Structures are given as structure tokens and as C-alpha cells.
Image (cartoon, rainbow, N blue to C red; front, side, top):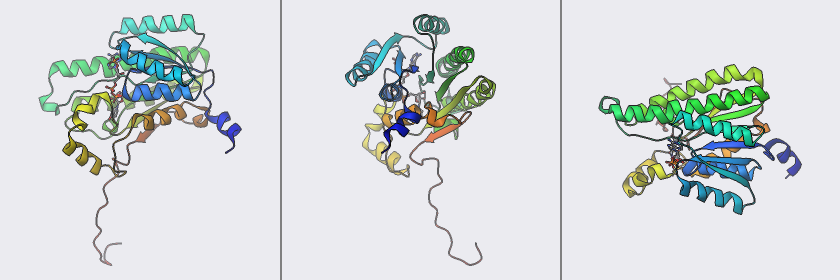
Length: 270
Ligand SMILES: NC(=O)c1ccc[n+]([C@@H]2O[C@H](COP(=O)([O-])OP(=O)(O)OC[C@H]3O[C@@H](n4cnc5c(N)ncnc54)[C@H](OP(=O)(O)O)[C@@H]3O)[C@@H](O)[C@H]2O)c1
């Protein structure tokens, strides 16, 4: 392997990264991957214990990180975080908008309470963070933002209707922001995971029957691990992806592919 080639394109040495929802699941794996690629990671979340697990893992492998307790649904708290961060650091090179919650219901059964909770965290809180980060990056004329959406933001899951529609909205916002920010050298993309093991779905996949039927519906035959998203996201913000903006990388084990269908054996159908 030509390590200098790999380093030239994938190294994040010295880059300053911020990850929301770094206290668990996919966000933790993204923060760990970024740190292993060389970035200094700011870990955001509400759970002190969760952040400290991520923190320990990064420090043990020689990385650099710091924790911030921030509830992203509180825009004043987010604003204060961005001010504190920029006072302490001179720049922000990478922003990963990952934090999110889920509520399961078909649209006609969705409660107003669930709609408001999802909007507050997954839409308003997420967009607010992306806006703050893009304004910092616009000033410094460089940076890379990735928002974690979902396959459900490309094809809705009917029993996660509000969640899915908000992820569709984030896909649109990502493209709009990418169009505005390109002239300042700031890239904006999304990563859309399929089904991935995490704290949020552990209770469902601990039911054997459900897990097996889910695995059978995924062409690669398994539910993803958070690291399989973390490594993709760390690569996306590296210089190896310097020409990519306004794009979505789908990481779903092939779940959105149409299942193989038997074709009729007849000369009439070509
Ligand atoms: N797992 C999947 O199958 C899957 C598939 C597609 C997309 N996704 C997306 O991936 C992202 C991460 O989800 P996950 O599966 O890793 O779930 P998870 O393990 O439940 O993690 C969610 C993270 O979001 C943080 N969070 C939630 N509300 C927050 C708030 N108000 N303020 C700050 N942080 C908040 C949580 O931190 P605290 O509890 O510390 O606040 C936690 O770190 C989400 O955007 C989710 O929609 C997941």
C-alpha cells in the first residue's frame, strides 16, 4: 500500500470537527472514525455518561477530543456552544449533523406531540446547527458539512411517516445549502444509512423473529454496524471527496435495491 497517497487524500490531521449526537450509536462511531483519521473532535450530546464512553475510546487510541453537553432542540444552547467553540478554537473544518430521535406511527395516527418533538430536534435543531456551521465556514472559505439522513428520507417507511418526511426535508435543505455554499469552498453532503444497530433500535432487534426478517430483507443479509457508517462519513469529509457537494451517499446494504424478480422465460420479452 502507498501510505503517502492514502495520507494525502484521507488524512484529517489537525482538522477541527464537531459531531452532534456523539454520545451513542452512529454519532459515536463517526466521532471515533474522525479522530482515527486525525481530526480533533468536539463531542456533543445530552448524556454526560454517553459522551464519556466515546471520549475514553478516542483518548485510548491516541486521539484528541472534548465534550460539550448541548441539547440541539434548544437553539439558545446551540448558539452558546458555537460561540464558546469559536472562542476556544480558531476554526471549524467539519460539522456532522447527526443527532436525532425517532417516533413510530403511520401519518394518520401521528400525535401532535410526536410531530412537534421530531420537528424540534430532527428539523429545527439540525438545520440551526448546519446554519451556524455554514456561516463560520463561509467566513473561513473552507469546510465540510455532512447531515445524517436515512433511507427513509429517500423512500418513506410508512410506520415512521413524520420521521421520514423530516429526513426528506433535510435532504432538500442539504442540497439548497450546498448550492449556496459552493462559491465559498464549503461542501455540504448527506449520508443516508439503512438499518444500523444502535441504542435507538436495540429493543426492536433484540426480538429474534423481527431481526431475522429484517436481515432477510437486506441484500447483504445483515443489519449494519455503526462503524460502517462512521468510516464512510470520515472519508466523505476528507480531501479524497473534494469534488463532491450536494450529494447523498446511501449506505444500506442494498436495502433500497429492488429484490431479484424472476423474469418470464420467453422470446417475446427482451
Ligand atoms: N440506526 C439506524 O438504523 C439509523 C438509520 C438511518 C438514520 N439514522 C440516523 O442516525 C442518527 C443517529 O441515530 P442512532 O441510530 O445512532 O441513534 P441513537 O443511538 O439513539 O443516537 C442518537 C444520538 O442523538 C443524540 N440526541 C438525540 N436528541 C438530542 C438532542 N435534543 N440534543 C442533542 N443530542 C441529541 C443522542 O444523544 P443524547 O441522548 O446524549 O442526547 C444520541 O447521541 C439519527 O439522525 C438517525 O435518524 C439511524
